[in-house]
Length: 44
Image: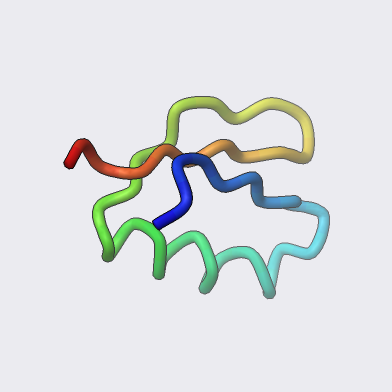
């Protein structure tokens, strides 16, 4: 599992589903700034 995921929000229709899938596996949003969302994996 990847520790951090960066999602580019400029392509809204594509990132919404991707972001949702990461949330379903336990990732949490730790930062959102400009066009970028940073997600962090759940603790082991």
